[in-house]
Length: 293
Image (cartoon, rainbow, N blue to C red; front, side):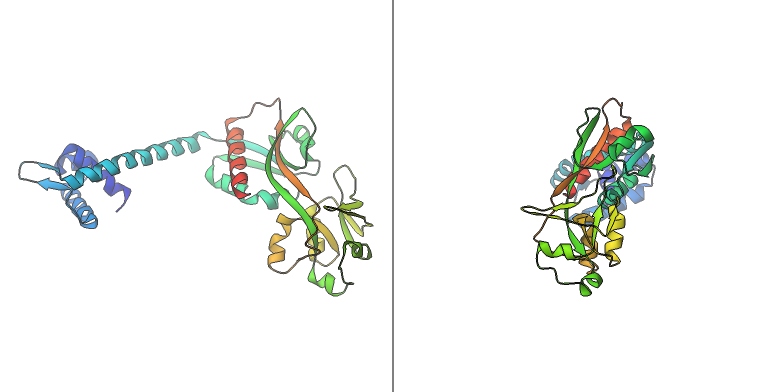
């Protein structure tokens, strides 16, 4: 049983004739008759009373028509709405991502690309955050943390938590880590913000530690790779490290410690008039991000 068989049944029921239904659907009468017979066999009940002069619905047929007809209309309306929506939504969007945000939002962006094939995306990996919107002429930026700038609108996509990670190869050749204070005797890899500021203090829930970094880097993806290669211990967004932890390529050191939560936001200029494609992208990404939390 498929939607075409149901449409055929409704057509026969409305026209009251195999011949008229066949003519309306531009097919053969014998095919219509055979399809109805197959449908009746699948349902285990006769749908039509046939005579030499006319045919009419049986009580079972009337009940089936009441159930099927509104469902068909809903399916047809849905197909029309989505077909036209996707055909109408087209254009090119310029989107900036922080270097690590692609690992967090990759599925949502990929799903959007499949759902709206006529929208083209120019994606820029940026280091300067939302301030790159104007310089690069971007429609959106996916940035981390709060912004205090009245020229921009910020909408929350998701939240990341940073924790401490190291590779098994590094831990095997290093001293044991039992407390937060033990970290100062290790090779620490630190994050450097786009403005040049370095996290010289690792702040946890109820305590903090001053750190002297062996390496500083402005890219979480690079810190991840250095950590994976055994260069030392670092703080990473949990979302980035999850797969490596699952495959035992990284270990969450002192798992009871958390360096806090940071929001990932979708940011765009207040004074911009968003195109249809931009509005659809924003609505889609916000909805999908919310469902994935």
